[in-house]
Structures are given as structure tokens and as C-alpha cells.
Length: 95
Image 1 (spheres, rainbow, N blue to C red):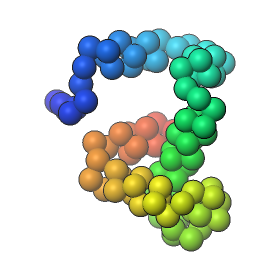
Image 2 (tube, rainbow, N blue to C red):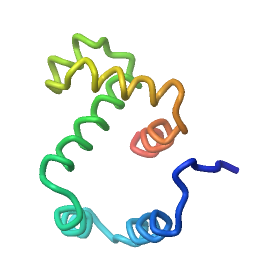
Image 3 (cartoon, one colour):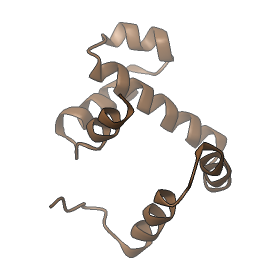
Image 4 (cartoon, one colour):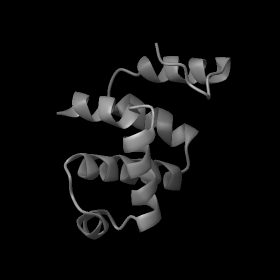
């Protein structure tokens, strides 16, 4: 079983709440209250970068498509290669 380095009661509570959101509208309402607009946009870009890397797109293609910095692309790629498999598990569910 996976053991996160970040595990805490507060994060458990947050994640359990997110899992109970019923639909996209509920997610919009919750995340608009919890996050800044920039934080949400950054999360969306990172997930799109992960999707494109997962599809074996080049850094140049990803920059062109997302306007993400090479540092962001590199950070996401590092998470895909050495991370907790969170991106891969989420991406497999979206196929």
C-alpha cells in the first residue's frame, strides 16, 4: 500500500471531501472557493502537460500547445518518471 510523505488528517479530510463531489459543477463551486484563479489554471496546465508527455509529445510541442514553461514541463515530467504514479493513474481513468 502506498504511504504518502504528506499524509495528514487535514489532507485526508480534504481528499475525502473532494471524492464526495458529485459532478463537474460541484467541483467548479468547491475549487473556485478553495483556490485562486491562478492556482486552478496552473493545475489545469500541469495536468494537460502530463497528458501530452504521457502521449509522448515533445517539449517543443507542449510549449506550443500549452504555453507552459520548460521548468513546468520538466517538473511534471519528473513527477511522471519518479513520482507517486498519481498522474498515470488519473490519466488512465480519463482514457
